Image (cartoon, rainbow, N blue to C red; front, side, top):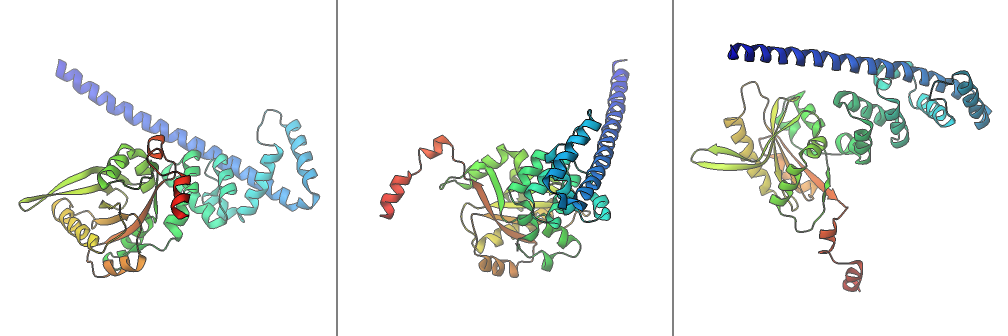
Length: 338
């Protein structure tokens, strides 16, 4: 009787989870549809305001007053918001672009993008990231402030993916790499050891995964892998569910040296041989270093036959009180300079 009840309970929990998933999906759809309708309305209002922009600020102030009197129960018709509608219409030049994805995110997110991005391409890239990754406005703001678009899209990355991976996988791998990575949740310290950096990253694993991007699953730190009679340990091992591949990260608290590529290449071969399944794509490696000479890094990767990249990383400029006490003061530095 007991085992039968347990089976029924297990089945009930499965049914409950399915229903909860459907409710969540429906709620998301309702919210998305509401966003679309409101944003299309605001874009259209913005276009009207643009057409009569020669009437000046007084026009927007009068319009705001009349709209709030006509629709007293509705929010969104303040002077400030009407000006955002005008900027939204100016930023999104056509209804086709609006419907592609520009109308599907929250109005708060759109206002953030108007304030903090400089052009349509950047605006639409962040919009797409919001939709794909489910970013809140807070996360979006953080990503813009960390210059994610420039680090992930515009930067000239140091990888050998084009030579070592077939398309379209090489392009997809290139897209997920950033340079530099920003670990602003870890205080900067001059004598931070690699093991201490690993500790700090793993303790803040949620923030670390946010920086690495969507699709990354953390497999472990100092991940053991047996090769022959010896056991080796990978600094950080991830699996990317979008690319269907393992992702090996080696951390260095010094600048890049050519010999680092040889060790990472060995780890990639070991993961491909011991962990990778036939359905997985080739394992990718990333060397995270405290700076690099780009030309040296490019030469080092040129003849390596495993796909890998080299990126810088930056730690927080915010120093804890404990660390501040160990660092020289401005007066000490000035004395040394003088």
